[in-house]
Image (cartoon, one colour):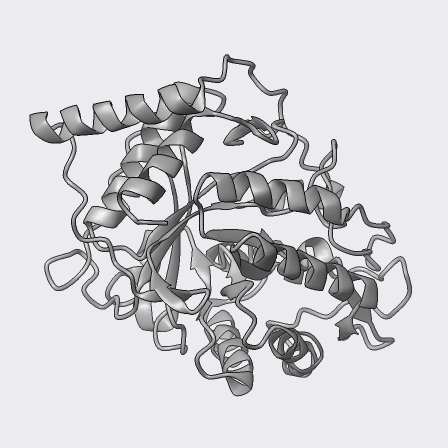
Length: 384
């Protein structure tokens, strides 16, 4: 999800949740099974038959069916200061391990296997030098992240770690916590080298071989870094390549991607100047629609140059606050992704407060109907 318009305030509190009656687990599962059977018999949906198990989750190839938990929330939005302190804004942090444990337990009850989280959004968790380069990862942030990963392991989950979002490189002021004016590490080669050596490689080394980490997303919806004027495609293409190389220098089998919500990134003439040919292990696409229509893969599809697995790593309705639409869209996106051979899908989003108008829950252990749909597919189609 593209969030650049919210970044200056570092506050993403959404509209109040719309209350509705939660249906019971047994009734929901039975109803979904019956509806799916009728739909398949009447031909109103296409049968799931081609799900790809092309990416490794916790040591084995699995189809991905999970959720986004982009930042932790304890009653208010903690964008940019949830895991650790933010030395750029001089905010403290709100990480509570026992709360994270509750979130993971709830998500595991959906039979999800992957949770996508954001790390250094709004420059949280980073330390800065007098030259404006990034000098490392804050120790409290790293310890809390280790705790997050261990708790994911405890629940049999795996995290996709999103290193930055697209607007982070636009933060070019003086850190409130001390340091020189921040330098854009995508466009400046020296700042980029320091970021890779001081942040990316140590991160990859810390979690090398850890089943709690499924892979890395280099930049959330990277296309907005270009369309917003923070860099050009040539600079971003080189940065994606260099970051993937840095991670793979620690372990060549680590799964790395860089997300986009611009389907033109896969088009002939664009692909090898954007997300293609940069050493990624899989592609990461985001789509929001009330009438999902994912593209097919392979030589018969519109983007035959896609040469790696692709994950629908964010999906949801375009209309917000309508939980019936949300449920219908969830089933459509999961089914289409599976039928068309995509490697999996991750719902947006698990907001523990239920305040986000795209949240899939009313609150922890209080699901929207779409969660039962996600659970039904996990159990009955993907064996999770």
